[in-house]
Length: 447
Image (cartoon, rainbow, N blue to C red; front, top):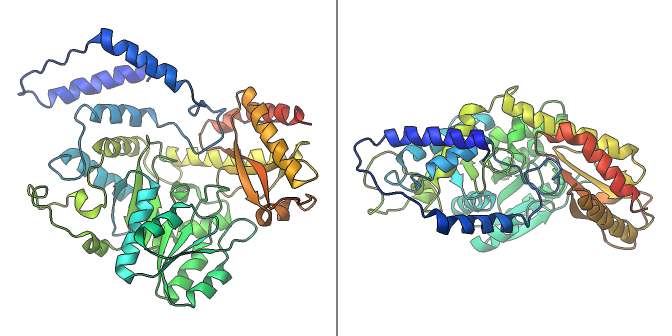
């Protein structure tokens, strides 16, 4: 925290202390001589990291939390509430419900049931578990570009998992989906709005009627892309898919990605609150203090950090989820940065532009005659950029997804390593001139 954040936290802590005026004081003195060297050692160890917080880090999906989230989280840790039962997190449970309601409103759900989770993996697990319980078994279908968590969680649940092929942009092939649905053994179709490799958006508006006709649930994994519902205009593919979210049976969104939250903070939401019956259980030592819903009653997780709910609630209080609002404008800056970087790559001497970005992820190749050489050069660019403090990511792209955009490449391997930039920080657009300059230097150094 910087000096201003530290001052704000101190003021908030004083206000929190005033809320418990009748409590006798507790000796809270710290042994500075013992603790200080430990924390300095921690700082040294944390230095063995990429600078995830800086705009020159454009590699993996890492976005620093908003200062209000950091402060609110630290403030909540003075109490350390547990949002399992109301006894353990009375205020933070109410804040979680309000935060979930804001996410549901963004999606368009009039009624909903949902809660925060430790991340997208557990959130997706819960959505698939509910699908299994309601369908009595059956297969899970997802695209070959969907996150690997769906295959893994299907295995945990004892459900068969099958992949559906994709088009050249990495979007689910709806004709292949229709053929799989005809088998009559599917419990759930997973549509991804924002794949982690290229930010691809499955055609949800086409998937939904096929699944409905087959009597199959549709789950939307929008862990990465969900917040772009607020900034979907300007691209018909994006607009149609995000508009259809309201018809999905369940949706996963990760506030710890574009929602400016600390890890881990995921969320799962269901359109029909009646799915809560699937969670029903009895724990008399926990649920006794109120007839109001305890969040632990609708969650596979038991102990859950109330601090995550407090941080998210504070962020939504400052930055409401409104189209055209300040939060949405930040997403728009990321989309613009991705378009501008893609346009720069199209003009660059050392790189090959691949599919145009649907969200804020840009994927491009390092020019070479053969796939093997292109892979080696991409890794060399990755290293050369890091030497200049520009940190990228590498991606293994199958031939089917690269060849349509790179027809001149000779294929001496089934895969090609390409470069990937995730421009999810609002500052990335302002820093794009420096990013492209350093990227150009890295490319030239590998000729």
